[in-house]
Image 1 (cartoon, rainbow over the protein chains, first blue to last red):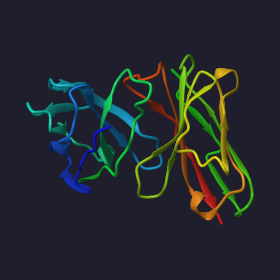
Image 2: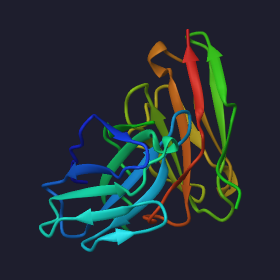
Image 3: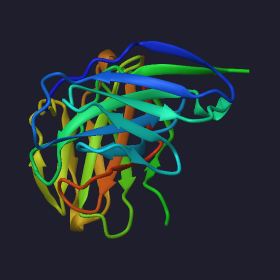
Image 4: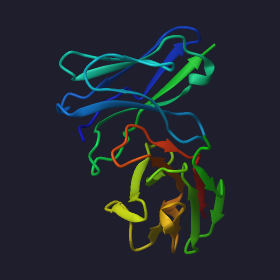
Length: 112
Length: 114
């Protein structure tokens, strides 16, 4: 799997949008971009994934650049409960040999 | 649906003792994973099962760690003997099929070796 680069930490004001960047400059054409988050004392939680197009679900939006070398996870209205470590992962789907490989992630602190 | 269940939630043992962790995946999920998460780091995959067969155990320290998944449902991870550096959270996850889009993780077992 391709490596990803994320800032180690970010702050965001409650109610504002949180924009978490991820660089994956060596991503292959068949690799998806995944985002997971891990709230303190819990296991990681799936948020969203995408291949080329921007994606949106009830939790977040994923914006992938046209060259696919970077992406941004957007939490539109951050709450205190969104304080967590956010992991950006690239991975081939449908291949038994490609498991989720986590890096260090970004520690997001949402402040009142 | 019920989530991935893990027990115990916490465990403290002395070095050189043995310990076992239990995981019950989501019903119907064929694939099961064990991860180790050392404080301040992302989770690291130890072993992956498809039903009751091992798909990948290349990161499992086999001199002291063992895992099994009898009948393709519950799984146990054992450490014998434990070392101080084994102190970590052990996470179990499951997915419906191999290479599935999303994994569901349990809350983990926090192991402290003293």
